Structures are given as C-alpha cells and as structure tokens.
Length: 241
Image 1: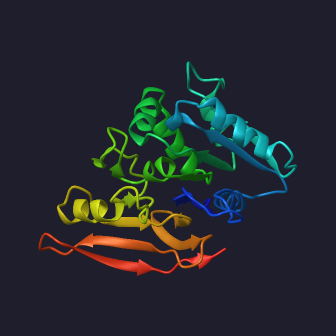
Image 2: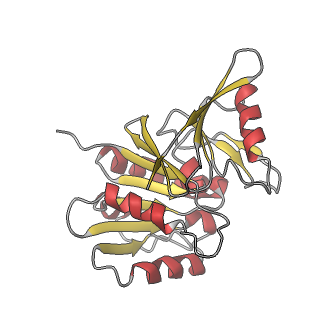
C-alpha cells in the first residue's frame, strides 16, 4: 500500500495568557502523525527567518532531552549545511518549516531545488508541517506581510494543495480575516481554508481530513467565491486536542 501523503498546516498561537499552552502542542501533533517507530526523525527548516540562530537554538534545546525524537536542522544560509539534501530529507519522518517570510522562503527554496525535493518527500510519506509561512507554502498562496506591514496576496506557493490559505484568521493587529475573504471574493486567490490561532489543518493527499485545535472555541473556515463578487464561508469545528 502506498504511503499516505500528509500535510499539517497550522496557525501558531501568537499571544497567550500566562499558563496557557503554546504552539508546541501543535508540533507534537505533527510528530505523532509521522511516528513510525519509537524514535521520530524530524528536520527543522528556519529558512523563512533567514536561519535565525535564536529560532534554531530554541528548537534544538526543546528536543535535546527527548529520546523519542531524532532532531536535525537544515540550514541554507550561507550555504546548505547538509551534504545530500535530498537523501537527508527523504530519510525523515517529519519536516517542520518555521514561520516568517513566505516570499523569501519560496525564493530561497527554489534557488536550491527544494520544491521538487519536498514534493518527492510528500509523495514518499514524509509529513510536511509548519505554522504561518510554514502553512501557506504548501498551498497556492494567501495573504502575507512579507512585502510590507500591509497584507498583500502571495500567489507563488508550492501548490501541493489546490487551495489558498489564510493564517492567524482572528489576529486583531491585522485585518487578516477580511483581507483573505476579499481576495477570494475578487478572484485574486482561489477558494481555500483559513485557521484561527491554535488551529491546524490535517490533509491526506490533497483533501482536508480534519481540523484540530489546541484552544477551545477556535475554528477553521472554508472560504469560496459566491459568483457575485462576494464570498461564502463555512465554519469548520475542529477537534480539540
């Protein structure tokens, strides 16, 4: 039986109250999706943050004491730190992509031939996962602040999934909800899925299998054009984890 093609695309928790769980809950969910044995092989890509040393150290420290995760990092700045990127990535169970600039992410990946390598990984059963830019990249595109503080359409996603994607749909500091729906209504973006903070989309193949949330009351949304310069939205009640 061929391996399952799995993508877990999520909106991390941007703000949380003291004592509330952080986005590591969603990362753990991705790890369990990729578990084939007691030890899960996970590679972390912080390309969207320019291979931020702080981000890499944070995740390295987080997994340092986990005997059930074999953690590695693939850096592309100033050059790849792994010889044989294709072989390395195909040997993983989970590839975790950090958030940041989705525009820069895809540009750098394209320069290094990663879009095809990642597609091959997906086809081989490696779980592709990530928050924000690490969610948008697998779709056709979505709203982004990669160009400036305002939200602009990004339409150069890898397109493994035939949908657009809106992340941080309930983030008050930017009009992400309204902007995403306007872009879909105007035909700038195709129909797709939006996630509120703490919500993730688990795809099997090219179809949504389920939405999950680590925050009670949060939702995902399917947004599509209504054919009259407007949009229709359908709430998706996620499973609480």
